[in-house]
Structures are given as C-alpha cells and as structure tokens.
Length: 100
Image (cartoon, rainbow, N blue to C red):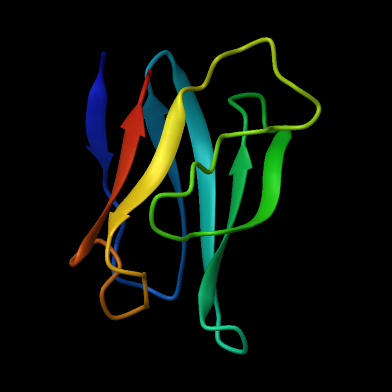
C-alpha cells in the first residue's frame, strides 16, 4: 500500500496539482470564513469536476463516494491531525493520499 503526504500551504485559498498514484488531480481549497471551514473542489486529469464543495475535515475521505462513480480508483485523500484553519493548514495537520 502506498501512502504519502500531499503538500499544502497555510493559506486561505490555493489551487495546485497533486500526483496521486497514476493520476494527477487538481485540488482547489478555499476558506469559508462564515462557516470557518475549508471547501474543496477536485478535478480529474482531464479537467472534469470529480467533487465540489466538500469540507476539509480530519479523517474524512475527500475521494469517497464520487458521483457519478468513476471507473478509476483514485484512492483516498484525508486530512490527519487538527481541524484546519488558514493559520495551521499543513502545519498541525497533514493531507495524506493512500492507494488502499
């Protein structure tokens, strides 16, 4: 089983590409100050929206339950550690990808 850290910055908004196994996905993270939570959108290598508006919370798989279901197994992408804020994202928590 492969498992590794996906680098994120301690910023209120960011867009980056992440090589997750054999796929490079685009991840958009934006702080929603009204709800004090990060909102996450994830796009496929072809630019198709895989998921939108998911909250970045500890121990929640951002790639679970994609609809419509994908023929591709993207693995899991979860935040481990403290609940994220713009001040601690990537510092007191870690975004982790796993293939199994």
